[in-house]
Image (cartoon, rainbow, N blue to C red; front, side, top):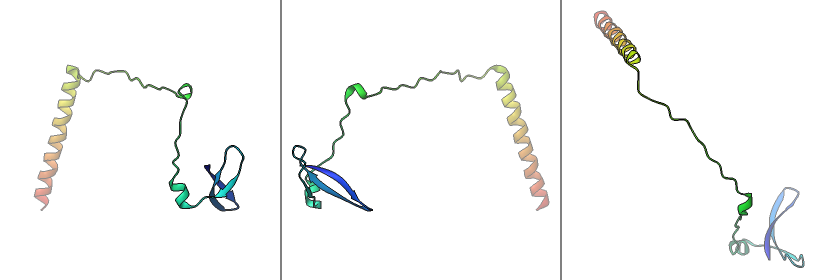
Length: 90
């Protein structure tokens, strides 16, 4: 006997069905606890996937380092000026 989900209108329920003769009887919760569902996929139907990414160099060039340093200096200087303005206004 195998558990099969049935639907009548909006109601869903399980029955135990004999795969040989087709006999069915309504299954109780206790009956369903005895059965487990196991899904088996044939190895010929499995798909193997892979994802490859290109490695990128993360080192900065000397020009990029200099530009970044100047950017930070300007940023810090503007932050100091804002702090001084806030202190003077208080």
